Length: 151
Image 1 (cartoon, one colour):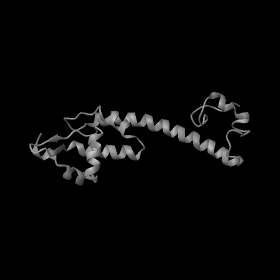
Image 2: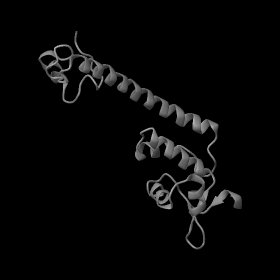
Image 3: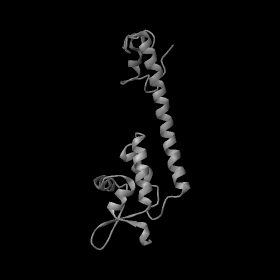
Image 4: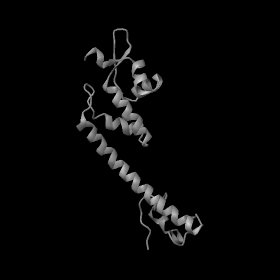
């Protein structure tokens, strides 16, 4: 590794806008694997700037640390991720985002219906759930979880 490709934790913090404590936290979660110099100080690769940027974006999109860790585990530790690596990650995120968009769309459609009738009571709603039919399918908000109301 070239000397210009090695960063101290302070340099990494300055480049990413993260606090040193946040970088240490991400390290404990396995999102980064710094090496240590002879004095025991952490040394990061320049590619860790991209990894941390990805982590921050993924968190803003609502992904958990375990989800992010699982995705990053497929990235190479010894080299900067290339376009193909990021394309694979994007595809995995896209699938999850599509599922969340579908769920939010169902929520919006059902919410509009509830606001329209004014009852806000899914167990008594004559339109969406007469006689609490949804309860027979299990616990939780059945229609928001993907079950279709019977017509």
